[in-house]
Image 1 (cartoon, rainbow, N blue to C red):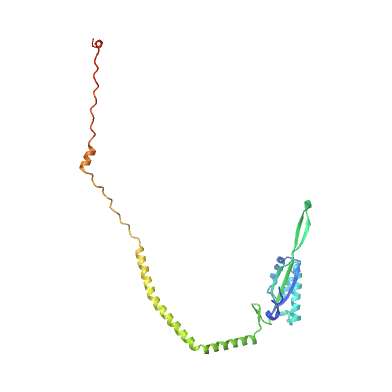
Image 2: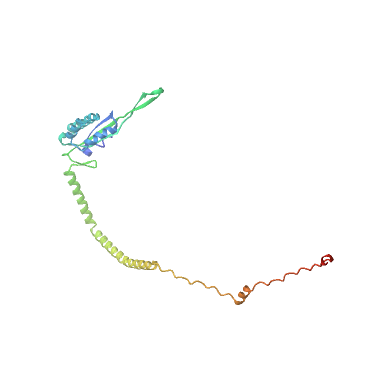
Length: 243
């Protein structure tokens, strides 16, 4: 990261950075999470008794930041607080290890970039990357804004009053027009509710079939006429049968 972003003149932060530290960024972040937001004296104690090896490299970066605050900006170490501490991934060094059957496996040696930002409790407060040193700058900006507001009120006093009256009249007209609309809407809703009520379905009478004519019944009831059976011709007997 560029030094202009964390310059002391713009933000009130003192910065120190160490690049290509021979440790993974994940391991560094575990230690930085413990010291973030603490005073410098408390952070040094935690780093001194930390079981992780990367704590020594972090302690060197913290010592460099404190020295920058003392020498370059004349700040007291007792008033310094770790405002931010983070680690980014650096270059990965690649090595290879021989394995069975003539093969080789790769070994990744991670590196990290460690950055620590310090702020003083007495110099000012940090607000989104800017320092409010209070006093002259704040009072001057407030007085200038008050003058601008007063001047705008004098020039636009009449127009503002007219505009306000117009706005109130338009609002009154809108409310008056909206009242009958609401009433009609309520009536329409009531009528729709009444019509939507379920009515019992009317039963239709069963249609009666017309009685059949008497002639038709007689024609139907008459049995079919039987035809007389045909008589067989008599067979004449021979002389032998007769005797």
